[in-house]
Figure 1 (cartoon, rainbow, N blue to C red):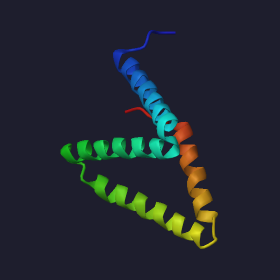
Figure 2: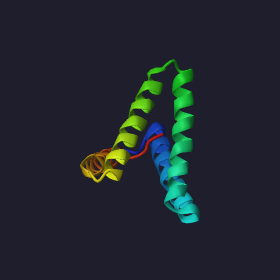
Figure 3: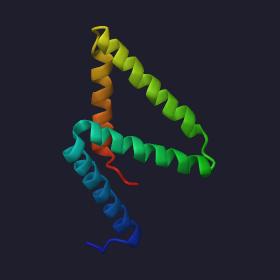
Length: 101
């Protein structure tokens, strides 16, 4: 097995940091803390994408928010299918693509 490159080591450290920060946020403020951590991180990443000229991040985030809102609305109206499907899909994506940066 070859030694890790500096890029691989940095990605591993970043992944460890993300997991640890989420854990600390959850321990101190519960699920709300974890949510707030990921919102702050997302806002920062959006700002970096905008500066890098990738303005389509606005449209992407808007659609994700609209999807989440639609799923909450349907769940509140008694139809959990979209909510359950959204959470299942999100969990599958997160499980296969751990945080990297």
